Length: 124
Image (tube, rainbow, N blue to C red):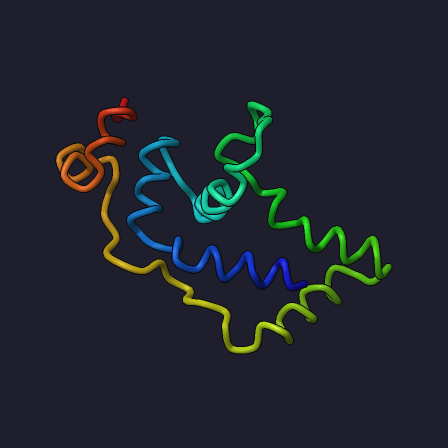
């Protein structure tokens, strides 16, 4: 459970429209689920071996603590999330990304805000 709580704390500062725009630019589109998986990706950057399918989509990291909890305790997913919520308390973070929302597909705006990514990932 502590891993899940620490993971949430590490991810909180990445919950911004600026990073969402970067993910949108890199991947060509970005839903809220895809953005969450994108946020997990930098946490796993120290890993040496990557499967092609895992690059920029590290959803499995969010389930590591849950799987360990259910395997070790024999308790349910609901028990895990109830325990995490009880330990986390009021530290649940914002429901909306921080900063100003903008369209990463707008080339002029993206070039101004994300010049390197704009050059590396032009809009098709």
